[in-house]
Length: 223
Image (cartoon, rainbow, N blue to C red; front, side, top):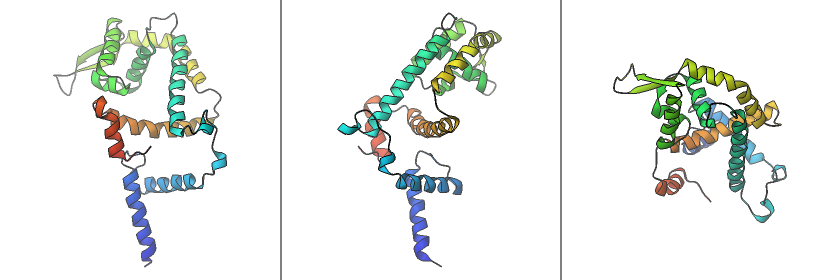
């Protein structure tokens, strides 16, 4: 038996477990192989293939550029969403996003719906209240736990959503811009990885004053 190779594999498995605390990869041989593949791609990535970002020549970090670009893209998307619901009964883009989630995922509790949309409870409850007042959603007792209430989209809500779906679909296509199919799929992969990382942290409801320090300590993030 080649013990050197065995030790190297065990070392890689240990490193895989340490770096996969946020479940970016599945905990099986498929996930391990994918991690090794991504690791080699990253290792072989040549500096000259790096894209340019504003301020790079002055030492601006990739993390800073990513954060700013995500903020910009969110604002662009909101602008298109605002246009998509102009002249309709929808007050905000969150109204139709909540309805789309209920339509696609079915009945759920208020808390589940709010968390699905990454809102804090007060903001989410205001949106739900507005949807109830419009008759677009209904709440009934949960079949699992009679003490809880679950909400679902009504026929009126379906109709309100359908009236705007063409504009909403057009808005989502515009947000994807001039990316080709391969770039869209790659972007989804990367954003899914980021989303899984942040959603796990978000779900813990860590106090704002402790959030950054806690994340840095637990996940060994470095400046």
